[in-house]
Length: 76
Image (cartoon, rainbow, N blue to C red):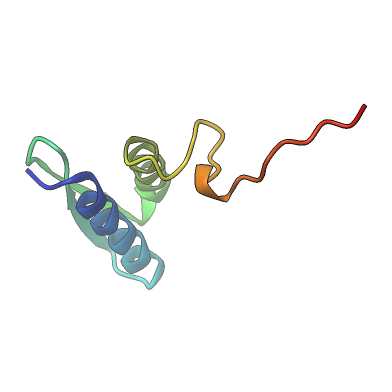
């Protein structure tokens, strides 16, 4: 089984290849099952990438990178 970052990189590469014009790309899920995406299912691939980003801790539920958030300041 591949680690989270490896799967995320594979999914991002697959999205890149679809954007370059490839008709079909495949990625491997946690369970080792291969899933195929096409131009028509590119939004499903984007959702899969967002799910992996959450799982890998690269984004939070809002879709923002937690390490890039600034401190919250309150002025009174």
